[in-house]
Length: 566
Ligand code: C2O
Ligand code: CU
Image (tube, rainbow, N blue to C red; front, top):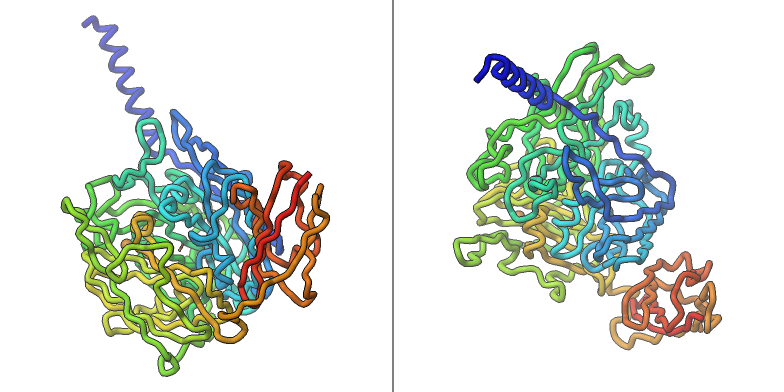
């Protein structure tokens, strides 16, 4: 080789090394989701594309104008919120309001299917405590695929208790939502869903993220939305941080801690004191090398990958100058929670988590020794029942158990009081291998003998495989199970052009839920009653025959009438 060409080869090599080392230190600015507030929320779920890295764009799912994840919804406790959820995906979906207490038919579980091209309009009165919740698809066997694509978003509930505290509350500045999860990309940059374990981290949909935070007390609202991984959170300088909420509300007081293990579906809000630390850098980390072997995210239970069993960086934080009115102290008290009294529990239900040998050395975890069956109601729960649920696991893996409708209080983990950060309102509990958990809750406000609520493992892979069950909350008052009267109503004008109105034979009748289906039986519109006074907008319907299925609020009986669209 001539000396000149050797020189160029060396130069190329040096340049290449330089480029690759520069790339490995390249950070992307964390994306903060837009916000929506008020009482009317419009969410359009869509297929889209996102450029995560060089090469092909990744096929993703977004909401409104995003190309991954969706807007953060702000609710005020006490408000009645109305959602317009439009599905423009090429597939059916559902949208579930995780952690929110509402009627089963508004819950967005596997039963509230939103077919492509249709709109779902649930509404409810917000009764949850101030905390961080989230929404995500829940279509049976499609939950992993649709959440992996990116469909989902934060819900932040505010109330008077939280608002009266001196807490950071400037969204995106000192009050920062972080949805953390992981993915594996194919060689063409598509998300891989074949069971191989993810190997790159995403925070708010951003690879290698960094963010600037002010030198004061900063609040992070952390949601683990990973398909199947827990993160043992901590900071790179081992500083203490203060947990102020569990899933469903404020803790009694901030809990100082240096590690917190968050599992799929769980949320915590933490305070980090960065006062006078201007120009320092600190990293949010996952210290997963120390996790026990039953926990998803350790090396032993999954194929070796770049994250499992390792300590890795989640988010680089650059501390900059403080804001004008910084919060600089951590409060000593937050609220006075009043949990249910175990002495008042009238029913104790025992559930099991176990491994089912599916053949070929494959173990699938199941609840109560059976797979999910959408036609089977596992429990009939009396309205206002205060219950203890005892979950006994013989599984070799730990599983995040989640229940819809309620927030609960953990009484014990293997007979002991749970750690302080878990002594608040929870809608999920991480059940370790071989562990027995007892929690107490009350099934109040909403009964519906037809529409069930779900309980399941929040590892989306397990849930999709059938690690799920369902219950209905039933009331003996106000529901006429036998001799259900026929609900009489008519539709006018018929044939219709723009709008159809409903006229009840008995004016005191109230509709609970209305579904408009076409001649093929496909639901086109799903509507709550209070909007019926404005008529049903059919202006965009193709001409033909349609059916209005109306559920009586009192009896939950369904009656059908047809109309013709001209
Ligand atoms: Cu986060 Cu059943 O759901
Ligand atoms: Cu599981």
